[in-house]
Length: 85
Image (tube, rainbow, N blue to C red; front, side, top):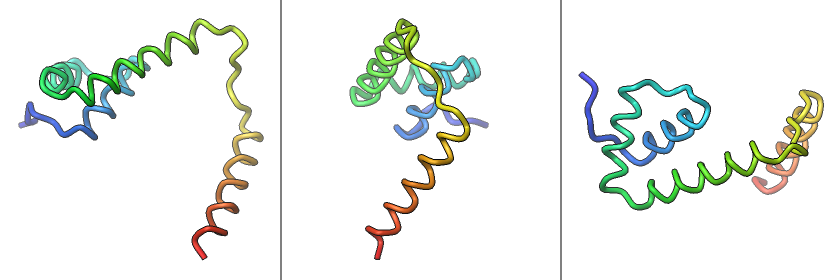
């Protein structure tokens, strides 16, 4: 049986899924219960909603291409390796 009280990490994950309409009804119920008592997650949710509205309202925002994504990932991993030595 799924527990009804969820940790913040799970609540944030469900919040993210909800933004993309990928969460289940049960997940939404658990998230809303969590939001009743957790102000940090309420703020996270509020900021997520704001960000989504900004992105959806801005016609100039374009998704990153697969090639650019790979370049960015490679540059990130190279820079991360420098700092782990």
